[in-house]
Length: 118
View 1 (cartoon, rainbow, N blue to C red):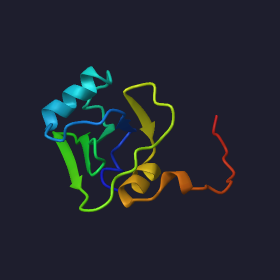
View 2: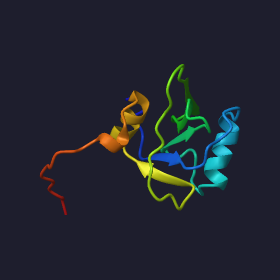
View 3: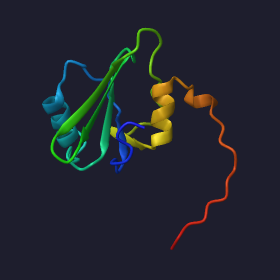
């Protein structure tokens, strides 16, 4: 996964954005709207109004990296649910599903044992 080895958390911005925004404007959104440090090591994900464009912003030790993709057909699925904040955390697996065009509603995870280390 792109950036996975360095990413602390993944945050999907819950508002649709104008994709003309560059690194500085996206970093300002992260700082002002989300109250988060854009250079924290987290990956910030933005999807436009039509769902055809996605941008991801990530700080990589010495500067920002931006990933930008436009779909020729289809759209990126925006996770549904009650969104009460400007962003919500997702995991790398869900990001891969979004990028791969997998319908999030149809995913059924099989039961697994999970041991929490105290």
